[in-house]
Structure formats: structure tokens, C-alpha cells
Length: 376
Image (cartoon, rainbow, N blue to C red; front, side):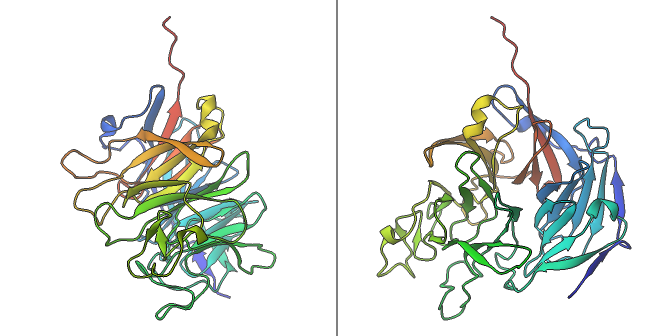
């Protein structure tokens, strides 16, 4: 069993929040909401996890870094960002449970026991091993479900390919969402036919798992749609690589297949918007109606003649379907098609605010709400 040390590679960055020089004034939100910088200098910030002492742990993707971000005075602005590990293999996904930090690399999940006590020198043990080694869609978003299991997606190792009995790739772990009982970490299939999910959450009332899925490339600017899906029964198949958006047959793999054999999306998004983190708000700060709404971070397109996405959307959920899908935070995409930020993942905070990571601007934002004054 391998270990990874995080002691000799510690470096601290201070005054992270106040040094930000980003055009926050270009970001627009609904009335009453505001956005500020919680921490700057969080290189390639991806998924976040909250420790019992308020430390926010942050993964990265290409940078291979693991961060600890601290706001010790509780003013909504972090005083320090500390790199507590480097050289990891795409440690994008993080989860925290009972004092331990779980970090998803491409082919394994690491466990740092009692992480808060060992930021200056801790060893990681391997909690889950045997995952595919492919870096293509190999970065992960992880979380513990209401059942206590750790949920781990495994993306397709390609743009489009068959992954179970296929000519090039043949591994049933590909293109799926798995769960693991850490006492006996063997994979159980939660969902199949999932191209690349980098965000999921559980509905606060039904307990159903909802997840984002990124659509394939090279079918043009406007096809196929990215998706928001939800799991209503174990081991459902969501269509990849045969169908996209529920009914669009793949030109390479859709022949002879029937759309009705696969689960239809809860909502089709724009093509190439790249939905990553999703989050059901259950805090007490936002308006009461937010409990039925799902925040969606559209990371933004790379394979399109003009850019789309680069925003946070809010979906209204009724009876398992998305009935409304409207902008919540916009402004990272400029009118000249340049970009200064890319939203990634959400983290609920104890005061009811929500943190949002940005792997392009290397920052974490804080979204808060103040009830507008009644001038009547």
C-alpha cells in the first residue's frame, strides 16, 4: 500500500483575499444576492470540502495541488491559503468525514486521517484502489451519500467509445457512477451510461441522486446537449454512448438502439456548456424557495466557434423535473468572447452562504444573501 507525505512540501500564502483584482463588478446576480472573494491564490481550485474546524480543503486538477484555506476570524474572507500536498495525480475531488479527508486521484482515493492535526506532516493511506488509470475524463468529484457510502464517478476514457465490450476500451467501471462502503471497498453501480459527471448532489426531500453530465464533442456547435439527470432506481443506464440528450442517436454508436431503453434526462442544457458542480441549497440564509432549487456551475465551452456557459444557473425542481432554468450569476464571459473566470463547484457554509470555486481565476467566491429593504 502506497503512502503520500504532506509535510516537507508545505508553503503558506497570506493576505489572499484582499489582494484580488478581479472585475467582480461585471458579475450580475438576482436582487439581494452578492458575491465577494473568499480566497485568492488557490491554484486551479476545484472541489471543496469543509472540515469540522471551518478549514476549507480544496483540490485541483492539472496543478496536482491540495490546499487548506482558513478564515479564522469568520469575516467571510480567508486569511491564508496553504498548499499541503503537491505532485498528486489530478486530485480534483475531495470529501470530508469524521475528521478524515478523502482525496480522489485518477486511479485511487486517498485518505488523510485526522487531517486538521497533521497539516504540517501527514501520511495518506489508500482507501480505494483499482480504478482505471486513464487521465482522459479521469479526474473526479466525490462525496458521501446519505447512506454513508462514498460515491465516485469514472468517466469515459475518450470523447465517444463503447466501454463495456468495446474494441478499444473494455471495463465496466468506465462511464459510470459507483459507490463504495469503505469497510469493504468493492464497487457498486449507481448509474451506467454516464459520459463524464463532475458534480452531483442528493435531493433534500426525495433523497434521489442528481448529477451533471458533459455531452460529447465534434457534433457541431449546437449538438449534443449537456444534461442534468437524476437516479430514481439503482443501476439505471443514461444512454452513453448510444444516445445523447435522451433522443439524439449517436452517429457512430446509435444504430440499432432504442431511446426508450435508457433513462431520459431531467433537463437538457446547451451544447458544450460543460456543467460541473451542482448543489441543492438547504441553508437558512437564501430565500425559502431556494430549497427546491438546484445551483448548476456551467464551466464553459472549449469546442465551439463562439463560447457559451461560464455562468451559474438556477434550476427549479418539481416532481423530479426541471421546470425552470435561469441565470443566477453571469459575467465571466465578456462580450468580445474572452473569459476571466470559470465556475466549478459549490460548498455550503454554516452561516448559509455558499462558496464557489474557479479553476481559471484561481479563486474561491462567497455568495451571500441579504433581504432587500421594504420601502413600502
